[in-house]
Length: 204
Image (cartoon, rainbow, N blue to C red; front, side, top):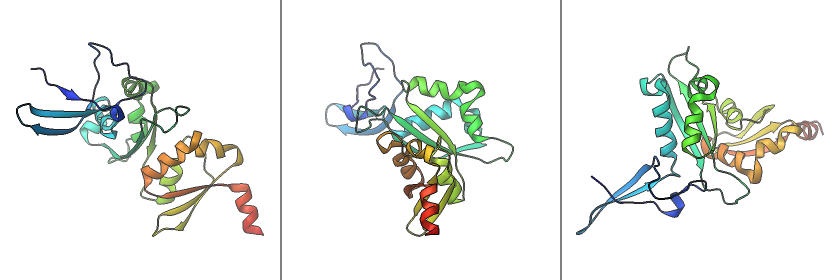
Protein backbone atom coordinates (compact mmCIF):
# COMPACT_ATOMS: atom_id res chain seq x y z
CA UNK A 1 0.00 0.00 0.00
CA UNK A 2 1.14 3.53 -0.72
CA UNK A 3 1.85 5.81 2.20
CA UNK A 4 2.38 9.56 2.11
CA UNK A 5 5.40 10.93 3.94
CA UNK A 6 6.72 14.42 4.50
CA UNK A 7 10.37 15.24 3.82
CA UNK A 8 11.05 18.77 5.17
CA UNK A 9 13.72 20.85 3.44
CA UNK A 10 16.01 20.66 6.48
CA UNK A 11 15.93 16.86 6.16
CA UNK A 12 16.89 16.81 2.49
CA UNK A 13 20.42 16.43 1.12
CA UNK A 14 21.87 19.19 -1.07
CA UNK A 15 22.93 16.72 -3.78
CA UNK A 16 19.62 14.86 -3.98
CA UNK A 17 17.53 15.24 -7.12
CA UNK A 18 13.89 14.87 -6.11
CA UNK A 19 12.32 14.08 -9.46
CA UNK A 20 9.25 11.96 -10.18
CA UNK A 21 9.70 8.20 -9.58
CA UNK A 22 13.13 8.66 -7.97
CA UNK A 23 13.85 6.22 -5.14
CA UNK A 24 15.74 7.03 -1.94
CA UNK A 25 16.50 5.30 1.31
CA UNK A 26 15.18 7.40 4.19
CA UNK A 27 15.10 7.45 7.99
CA UNK A 28 11.70 7.46 9.68
CA UNK A 29 11.86 10.24 12.26
CA UNK A 30 8.32 10.43 13.52
CA UNK A 31 4.82 9.06 13.08
CA UNK A 32 1.97 11.29 14.18
CA UNK A 33 -1.75 10.58 14.10
CA UNK A 34 -3.85 13.22 12.35
CA UNK A 35 -7.62 13.08 12.64
CA UNK A 36 -9.35 11.79 9.47
CA UNK A 37 -6.02 11.61 7.63
CA UNK A 38 -4.53 8.74 9.56
CA UNK A 39 -0.83 8.41 10.38
CA UNK A 40 1.50 11.12 9.09
CA UNK A 41 5.09 10.01 8.47
CA UNK A 42 8.03 12.39 8.78
CA UNK A 43 11.17 11.13 7.07
CA UNK A 44 14.75 12.34 6.74
CA UNK A 45 17.74 11.95 4.48
CA UNK A 46 19.90 14.10 6.77
CA UNK A 47 19.47 12.22 10.06
CA UNK A 48 22.49 10.35 11.48
CA UNK A 49 20.22 7.33 11.87
CA UNK A 50 20.24 6.86 8.10
CA UNK A 51 24.03 6.48 8.13
CA UNK A 52 23.76 3.85 10.87
CA UNK A 53 21.12 1.97 8.87
CA UNK A 54 23.22 2.02 5.68
CA UNK A 55 26.31 0.67 7.46
CA UNK A 56 24.23 -2.03 9.16
CA UNK A 57 23.04 -3.08 5.70
CA UNK A 58 26.50 -3.14 4.13
CA UNK A 59 28.66 -4.55 6.94
CA UNK A 60 27.96 -8.17 7.99
CA UNK A 61 30.18 -7.73 11.06
CA UNK A 62 27.78 -5.08 12.37
CA UNK A 63 24.80 -7.36 11.75
CA UNK A 64 26.59 -10.21 13.55
CA UNK A 65 27.56 -8.00 16.49
CA UNK A 66 31.35 -8.29 16.20
CA UNK A 67 31.56 -4.61 15.19
CA UNK A 68 29.48 -1.85 16.74
CA UNK A 69 28.87 1.78 15.89
CA UNK A 70 29.61 3.80 19.01
CA UNK A 71 28.86 7.34 17.84
CA UNK A 72 27.94 9.31 14.73
CA UNK A 73 28.34 13.04 14.06
CA UNK A 74 26.79 14.27 10.85
CA UNK A 75 26.62 17.60 9.07
CA UNK A 76 24.37 16.85 6.11
CA UNK A 77 23.52 20.51 5.49
CA UNK A 78 26.59 22.62 6.33
CA UNK A 79 26.02 26.33 7.10
CA UNK A 80 27.98 27.34 4.00
CA UNK A 81 27.75 26.09 0.42
CA UNK A 82 31.55 26.17 0.29
CA UNK A 83 31.53 23.09 2.54
CA UNK A 84 30.11 19.73 1.50
CA UNK A 85 28.15 17.26 3.65
CA UNK A 86 30.33 15.17 5.97
CA UNK A 87 29.91 12.47 8.60
CA UNK A 88 32.22 10.93 11.19
CA UNK A 89 31.48 7.42 12.44
CA UNK A 90 33.24 5.92 15.47
CA UNK A 91 33.36 2.13 15.49
CA UNK A 92 34.65 -0.51 17.87
CA UNK A 93 35.26 -4.24 17.73
CA UNK A 94 33.88 -6.75 20.20
CA UNK A 95 36.36 -9.35 18.95
CA UNK A 96 40.06 -8.50 19.09
CA UNK A 97 40.90 -10.09 15.75
CA UNK A 98 38.33 -7.99 13.85
CA UNK A 99 39.44 -4.60 12.49
CA UNK A 100 36.29 -2.47 12.83
CA UNK A 101 37.46 0.30 10.51
CA UNK A 102 38.56 -2.16 7.84
CA UNK A 103 35.27 -4.03 8.12
CA UNK A 104 33.28 -0.85 7.51
CA UNK A 105 35.44 0.29 4.60
CA UNK A 106 35.57 -3.12 2.91
CA UNK A 107 37.98 -4.49 0.32
CA UNK A 108 39.12 -1.60 -1.89
CA UNK A 109 36.53 0.60 -0.21
CA UNK A 110 33.64 -1.44 -1.59
CA UNK A 111 31.39 -1.25 1.47
CA UNK A 112 31.81 2.41 2.33
CA UNK A 113 31.43 3.33 -1.33
CA UNK A 114 27.91 1.89 -1.30
CA UNK A 115 27.07 4.18 1.63
CA UNK A 116 28.69 7.19 -0.06
CA UNK A 117 26.77 6.51 -3.27
CA UNK A 118 23.43 6.36 -1.46
CA UNK A 119 24.26 9.69 0.25
CA UNK A 120 25.21 11.27 -3.09
CA UNK A 121 28.92 11.65 -2.49
CA UNK A 122 28.88 12.69 1.17
CA UNK A 123 32.33 12.46 2.79
CA UNK A 124 32.49 9.81 5.51
CA UNK A 125 35.32 9.35 8.00
CA UNK A 126 35.26 5.99 9.79
CA UNK A 127 37.45 6.19 12.88
CA UNK A 128 38.26 3.77 15.66
CA UNK A 129 36.67 4.43 19.03
CA UNK A 130 38.94 4.13 22.07
CA UNK A 131 38.23 4.11 25.81
CA UNK A 132 41.33 6.32 26.14
CA UNK A 133 40.07 9.91 25.62
CA UNK A 134 43.41 11.08 24.22
CA UNK A 135 43.52 8.35 21.61
CA UNK A 136 39.86 8.80 20.73
CA UNK A 137 40.35 12.54 20.25
CA UNK A 138 43.39 11.95 18.04
CA UNK A 139 41.47 9.41 15.96
CA UNK A 140 38.45 11.70 15.65
CA UNK A 141 40.43 14.34 13.77
CA UNK A 142 41.23 11.96 10.92
CA UNK A 143 42.52 12.41 8.28
CA UNK A 144 44.80 14.89 10.11
CA UNK A 145 47.93 13.59 11.86
CA UNK A 146 48.13 14.44 15.57
CA UNK A 147 51.34 14.87 17.58
CA UNK A 148 49.86 14.95 21.07
CA UNK A 149 46.64 15.39 23.02
CA UNK A 150 46.65 17.25 26.34
CA UNK A 151 43.57 16.85 28.50
CA UNK A 152 43.59 20.29 30.12
CA UNK A 153 40.28 19.72 31.92
CA UNK A 154 39.23 16.06 31.97
CA UNK A 155 36.13 16.70 34.08
CA UNK A 156 34.99 19.54 31.84
CA UNK A 157 36.06 17.51 28.78
CA UNK A 158 38.36 20.17 27.34
CA UNK A 159 41.49 19.23 25.40
CA UNK A 160 44.34 20.84 23.48
CA UNK A 161 45.23 18.82 20.40
CA UNK A 162 48.72 19.48 19.05
CA UNK A 163 49.31 18.99 15.35
CA UNK A 164 52.28 19.70 13.04
CA UNK A 165 52.09 23.05 11.20
CA UNK A 166 51.34 21.34 7.90
CA UNK A 167 48.34 19.54 9.47
CA UNK A 168 46.64 22.59 10.99
CA UNK A 169 44.26 23.34 8.13
CA UNK A 170 43.42 19.65 7.71
CA UNK A 171 42.70 19.22 11.43
CA UNK A 172 40.46 22.28 11.54
CA UNK A 173 38.83 21.58 8.19
CA UNK A 174 37.22 23.97 5.77
CA UNK A 175 35.28 26.54 7.81
CA UNK A 176 36.02 24.47 10.93
CA UNK A 177 33.99 21.46 9.82
CA UNK A 178 36.49 18.73 10.75
CA UNK A 179 37.11 19.89 14.32
CA UNK A 180 33.43 20.72 14.77
CA UNK A 181 32.39 17.17 13.87
CA UNK A 182 35.19 15.69 16.00
CA UNK A 183 33.93 17.67 18.99
CA UNK A 184 30.37 16.47 18.44
CA UNK A 185 31.53 12.89 17.96
CA UNK A 186 33.60 12.77 21.16
CA UNK A 187 31.69 15.20 23.35
CA UNK A 188 34.91 17.13 24.05
CA UNK A 189 35.75 20.81 23.53
CA UNK A 190 38.76 20.68 21.21
CA UNK A 191 41.33 23.45 20.70
CA UNK A 192 43.69 22.77 17.81
CA UNK A 193 47.22 24.02 18.48
CA UNK A 194 50.37 24.29 16.38
CA UNK A 195 52.65 21.77 18.14
CA UNK A 196 55.83 23.75 17.36
CA UNK A 197 54.46 26.98 18.82
CA UNK A 198 52.93 25.13 21.77
CA UNK A 199 56.27 23.50 22.64
CA UNK A 200 58.07 26.82 22.33
CA UNK A 201 55.54 28.52 24.61
CA UNK A 202 56.03 25.73 27.16
CA UNK A 203 59.78 26.27 27.12
CA UNK A 204 59.36 30.02 27.61
